[in-house]
Length: 225
Image (cartoon, rainbow, N blue to C red; front, top):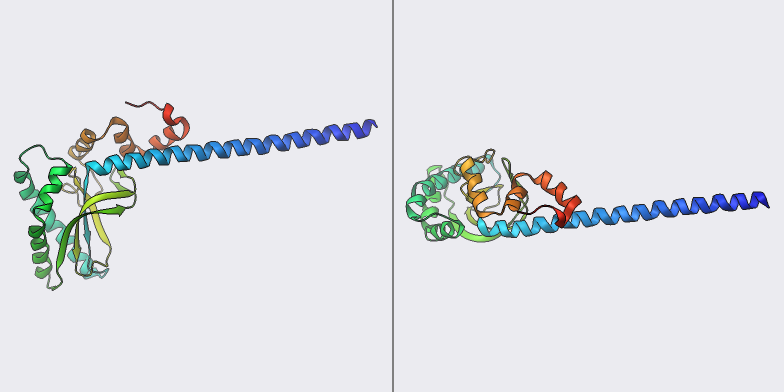
């Protein structure tokens, strides 16, 4: 009888321990899932705010051939040079995303001519098409600036069949005028972002890892400026 009671007691302890482990695992899993959802929701809201304040630039190559990719780079440089030279005088007031977009939309044909001249100068007959449209962009790191995936408005220049790998940057704030490889973002470009984003949103795009950790653990309890 004593042995039976002892075995029964041990069995209860094992069952309770197993139940406790399962409950802890479920609770941990629930907390992790909740933390991930908080981070993803915050990133999505920040992306939507960011999308209203930027204009991106997208060049799609005719194909993935080495020659067409080289033409794409030359068109990129020629169009950026044209915009840098002419856009500043065309924007009399302090520029923003809407003014930049308006300038671009009123100069689409000129941008196509610049692209077409560049393509022809390289010995090719295909033409370009310039449009401003909303497109999906994946996560992108520009130097130490992070732009979360989502839909953004962009100036798109399609070359020929537009079936090759593409290149993109942020036209406003002017991140792509200083470094076409997008490996360095100037202080001027960062200041432009800082002026159109809240302190928390700016933290999101400049310190993504720390931002994710903070929101994962603290959620809405994290400090907001």
